[in-house]
Amino acid sequence: MLNKERIPNSSDSSLLLLSADKDMTQIRKESLKSWKLQTVFLLFFVLVGSFKSVAQNIGSTDSNQYFKIISFGEKIDFENIDQTITWTVSNAKNNIYTTLRGNEINDYVFQEPGEYEINFQENKPHDEECHHPQFAERFKIKVEPVRMSFDFSKITFSEKIERGRNYTDLIITVPAEITTKDNSITKLSVPKMSVAGLGVSFTVEALEKEIVIGNKTQLLKYKLSGVVNQETYLMFDFYDFNNQAQTFNFHQIIK
Image: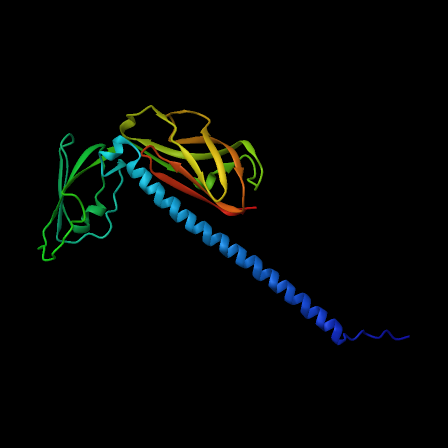
């Protein structure tokens, strides 16, 4: 007996089309949900970044005395500067006095620790009725004798982070390279770390309160306690000794 192939009828075709339509509708819903979540999270990060910038500027009495606090061997980006502007950079203790023009200030490396005075002079004519200089005529920059950078390629988590799970001892370990000028520092307090995300409630505690400077690379460990209450991405801010954040973005969505 010959086996006859079953020929789909119009009813079967309709069911297949209906099923495919449902699948496409579900895919669209999931894509829209993901897009909305990413958009909300992006806006959240923009707001967090703005708040963080303001907080760093007004965070302490010491930082209020200075335009910026940086580490030795670093530059400062003043963005695009008119070439008619003249700068003088001076550090009396280290006998430093330099004159710069326009964007040359962005390439200046503050090699020596200490307190620098920056004088700003705008040489173009003030033809406008209301003219405001880009900077104050005189401000100070503090250069610290210690530099710190985190190696996020080797960051580790003791447990997987999941939505709705209450953590009490989630440990994050991150290597940090610490360099001091002329080995002038032997001990430092461990800087803070924070976590941001939608519906995130974490407290953070450094497992060791003090860093003994020996090898350049140190393993810093932080204990997290709390919960992630909704689907979100996470952003981890690791602060250096100048209270400047270096950010690790956790690219996997927490579900």
